[in-house]
Image (cartoon, rainbow, N blue to C red; front, side, top):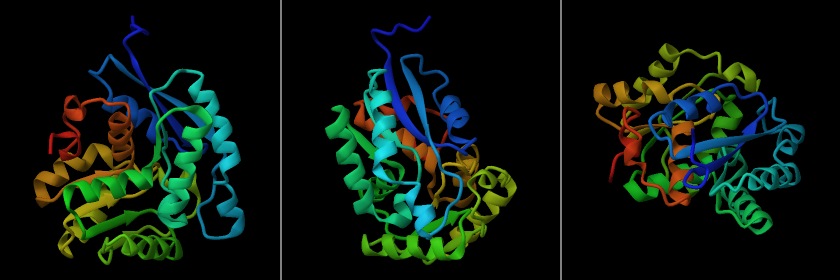
Length: 244
């Protein structure tokens, strides 16, 4: 039985058509009985730069969902989606601040987690691996370049339907990671919380000699940090969680 008095609960805002991040997060938390993850879904089905696609990420539904997560007395709230990568880091910073103001709970996002991770570990040449269309990929490259992150090494699948991202298999994802590593990336970033890259990261790191950071794993890393938890107990999931 879980001791609810000592359990640290992490709140995750989840795209509605995502089928990867919840089971992957649960797998990473196996062996951590004092930490649980709790999810609230938001309607997200298509990824693109149109106004219709962008409107899926308005603050209002995210704040409403955050309030429901706060009812579970979570220690942190993460927008476990990477929209800020193309909408801009300022968008996610404003969202995080609004969530905290509304709920009193520390908040962040997957995109901000990547930026924080790269800054902390001194990484500037990022191999960008995504399932997105070329225009979305180019916008991410532009936004990250402003932050001093060179994403000229990139691979993308050219997809726009969010549900379809989860259908990319590990062989395909690994091939993209190998390609950006071959172009001189200091680290590979698998940017999409509906792309199943976390489980293959350790083997790819051993093979390629660079860190491989998956969005679902990076989101958990950030949530644990906000909650004041030591990530070193998350073993078998690559260098991300190791002391640095």
